Amino acid sequence: MLPAMDFAPAIRRPDDPADADLVVLFAGAALVVADPDAPRLPSRAELGAHVPGDTVHVGRLAGVAVEAAALADGAAVPAGFALEPLRPLHGRLSDAHWALAGRAFQLAEWDRTHRFCGVCGTATERLDAERARACPACGYRAYPRHSPAVIMLVSRGDEILLGRSAHFPPGMHSTLAGFVDPGESAEDAVRREVREEAGIEITEPRWFGSQSWPFPHSLMLGFTAEWASGDIQLDPAELESLGWFTRDALPVLPPPSSIARRLIDGWLGA
Ligand SMILES: [Zn+2]
Image (tube, rainbow, N blue to C red; front, side):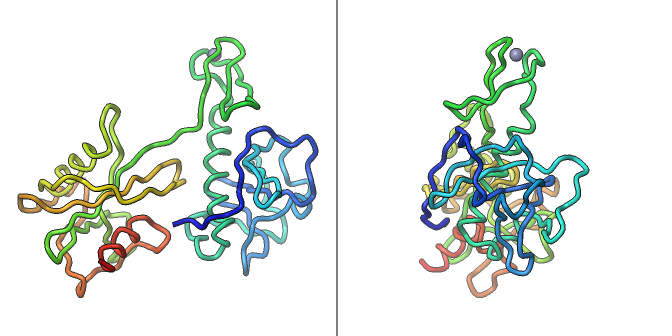
């Protein structure tokens, strides 16, 4: 799904910033990009004084250090750069820069929201040896957040089950998905989500693949399964519509960047 790339994650920030460093700079969930017509991640030299001093080191892309940071609250977007939401930049940024931006966003956002200890309120300190912020008073450590979610393609003969959430773009339907509950296996979560959202039972879920989904910090675990029993029942609290679709009558599908689309394309190619 994401290209193999020459990227090595690292935690400890290099001692000397270099002009060529790539800087992944966020304002909220939007990204500061250079060359708005053909967007790319800017370098430290290009951003100059707009690079915050306290960046989070992400790693090295082809030997070039990658730093992440949030633009200071209220700071203007530097002249000549554009502020663009991350998700629609897929296909416009290079695959390497898009994947890197997702990774950097999760790290910068975690860092920004864990500056104080959740136990005692003391200011935390970033560690060099592991990706964590530690409390010097009580020793509590905060690690980057991951929220595992399952996403599954359910088929029945030559049909697949697709549903539509109210917040989707017009006409778009996708595979069912939901977060894994504490104490639950991914397979249990697949069965529960299908039962809750569609009212049907399925065969044993089969592993498909996974995708980091930095909106804001999910790890999507993809499965396929077949219908076993029951008639679909729409839960209006969960979905706006739900139905079985054949390959020659598919609705608007999710974008190619998503694992949902890969699940569907995998079925279409089968
Ligand atoms: Zn503490």
